[in-house]
Image (cartoon, rainbow, N blue to C red; front, top):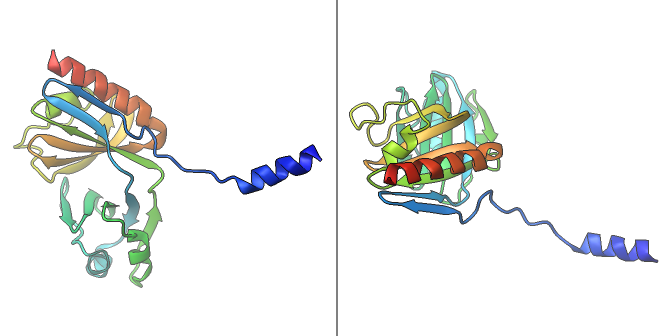
Length: 192
């Protein structure tokens, strides 16, 4: 009888997916670090001949130059390589479904639950990110809209400059605590 009750309880319960590190923030003099809300993301691979059809379906022109991004209506496409993009949708739409309608050659893989994103904002944002990232983050070398796959400490990240004093840091969920902690320590050091 106890087994039957346990099965009923287990069948009646539901699991709730919670974003990694949800609600965590760090504030220090000149910099704020926050976990961003969940977003829809795809890893997109496609040859040049497919870009027009994919751009039309996604509603944003896929950038074709290194270290660039394009954004429109809550959707951002980041150039990661000659045939590779990270597409992020913060407007609640599904870029994977949009790509599924395209018959041109491409590969689109949903990675929404794999990644976690942080914002690093404030006058000391670049110094904070540079504490673990070798990328030249001067505005001349990495202007607003610049994007690249790089490293932060020992973790691979995708970095997007969203404003002169703001960055979006994307990392794999399994590295999110490490990346957040490293950025938190760097923020404290930048404030000192």
